[in-house]
Image (tube, helix red, strand yellow):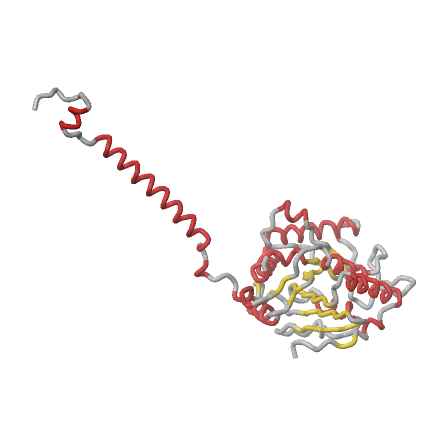
Length: 312
């Protein structure tokens, strides 16, 4: 079954008390803004930790995770309710197959999302994937072509495998900044977002560490190298995206089908007709004026004008 009816969010009770308190505060903040349902779409390449991140947020193992098992071909939506609030998280198959963008997977995802509203896009990648190449740009372009570049106004970049030792003796903060900057640049290029426009609505970047070996603080919360409890931090950033003033993305049939090739250029037809009208009319008027000027006038007209030699 691709989706499940909303069930009581019991998994939240398995999280440390401090994390539960912070999550309840954030849910209350959303309800105060009259937001009672949130749908999160999780996208990315395969093996980057999408399903593990879904499990971490919900506090239960809902999505299958195996290093030796290929990802399913269909999206899965997990719905949980808590105190009048409903959280939907949609886990999806990887968007790359054999070194190319998997158009079939994207098509399946779009059709699964029909008549659903996307409140937040989590674009997931690994922090320890040191290279950013043309494939990343192709994946981002494919997402943009599928959902429109407005989806990135609702986007959040999540780097998993955050508990690492940076290479080449780099400081952790510097490595994180470089990795973020490199991928954000490719998002801007792949999504065809103008530089100024991108700077005005910068996509937030957060870290995640789903491993059971993740360090914890005195409250038992999983923490990043800088001591930040990452699960409530991620949910806080999700809350900020929801309340950033941009419109959520509703997936309708028109969005799934994409632009109609028969509609291409229709916008320019009135402009072309207007151009042709004014140019042609101007040419005709000019020709008439020129013909009138060069026309040989009859003698009677010349006589009246006093130009004839009056010899008839």
